[in-house]
Image (tube, rainbow over all chains, first blue to last red; front, top):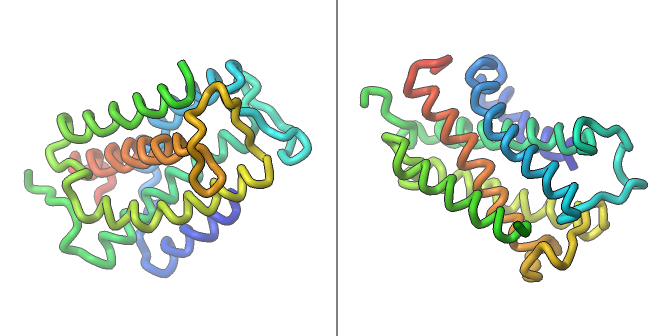
Length: 102
Length: 101
C-alpha cells in the first residue's frame, strides 16, 4: 500500500519537476510536527485498542510504543504525497498558487 | 476518548487553525480542493485495501459503525486533518520564504 502511494505520487517529482524533495528543509518542517502529533494519537489508539493490526500481514518490526514500522512510514509517505499533490496542482495551474506578497 | 471523538476533534482543530492562523487559508483556495479531489479517491482505495483484507481492524466500541469503502467513516476526518495540517505548514513556510523555489 505504501509502495502504491510512492509510485502514485513520486512520478510528479520527475515529470512535473515540482522539486519537493529538493526543498527538504521545508518538507521536513512541514511533516515532522503534524506527524508527531498523529503518531502520539496512533500510540494512544493502539494502547486503547481502537485499532490493531494482523501480525501476519505486517513486517513485524515495531518502534517505540509498540507502533509498527509501517505506521512511521505511513506518516512520512502520505504527507509527502499530499505536498507533492498540491505542488503538482499549482504547477499545472499557476493561477492557483498562493500569493507571496501578503 | 474514542476514535470517533479524536477524529472529529482533529478535523475541527485543523479547520479552525487554517481559517484563523493562515493569511491565505487552504480551505478558501481552489488548489486545496483540487488536491483533495485527487487525494480522496486514492485514500478510499488504500483504506479499502487495508481494511477489507483485515490488515488493520477497528474495535466496534471505538467507532460510529458507518463504513465507507470498507473503512470507518472516521478515517476520512483523520485523513482530512492530516493533509490540511501538513499542507498548511508547507504553504505557511513558503510564504515565509523557506525554500520557496
